[in-house]
Image 1 (cartoon, protein in one colour):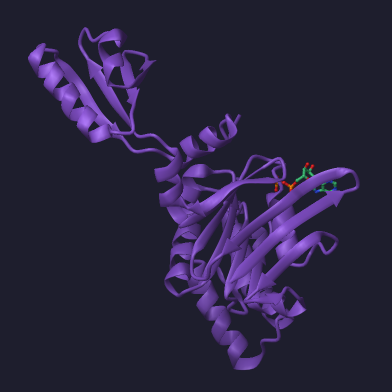
Image 2 (tube, rainbow, N blue to C red):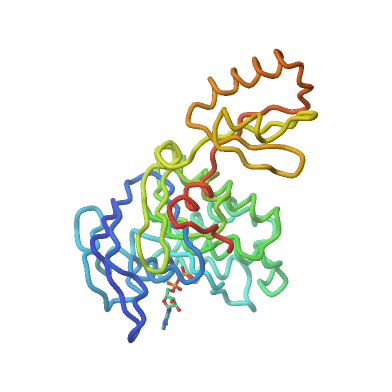
Length: 299
Ligand code: ADP
């Protein structure tokens, strides 16, 4: 659906994006992950034609991006853009009209969007009376008024309450279920892992890696085994893999997690080791990022 090829962007002498390429298939949620300053917003602004001066090519449904792309995509900016002194409905009407909706179509779509963002009951209240999370949900609603195929969200959950965060997650699930494509920029790895099917890691303007999350986990993250046992020493576990001590417990990293787990159980039984906890630990997206960049996202 969206093909980004060799995109480079300079702000004066700062290289914000360097030769970035990625293909976003339709109907998926695609995470764009990287620390602050990685270039996520710049890439999003290029995709949405807010920034025009760049090198490289971007195609939407096999055609170069143009003003028409705007009709098929909805952009949720990082900063909330709403008219505070009018109602939620008023704001949705404003955005709907910008996209050419009017009359009963506008009224019908406004109703649908209010329900999707969970604000039907507050629709006639002024935005100034809303919490940060409600404003954020309304901001997303504005970008959905023209029912776009592609929705691009820039850090939509920064600084909001847990309830609104859940609403946003639910909204994204619903959008995905109706075949929409969502690009989700975030520096919250857990959110991306939960919501997205694919991820692109950006760091210092460069595309570090991208692909299906399951495949990246398979390729880069080593599973591990957590063991807490009375009197167990690090040396006893080194035969099973690379071991790290975590307070009173140990974590063993091994590609062969299940067979190694069996061996550990056998070893513990044979040597009458009193095991308090023994668990297989699923590799996380954070581990993939660490493996690729040598740093954690939040460092
Ligand atoms: P992210 O969204 O991942 O935090 P950005 O795309 O905002 O990253 O920024 C990428 C780089 O470009 C950073 O070094 C940032 O300082 C720089 N940058 C972003 N916007 C501007 C701008 N308007 N003028 C100059 N430099 C900018």
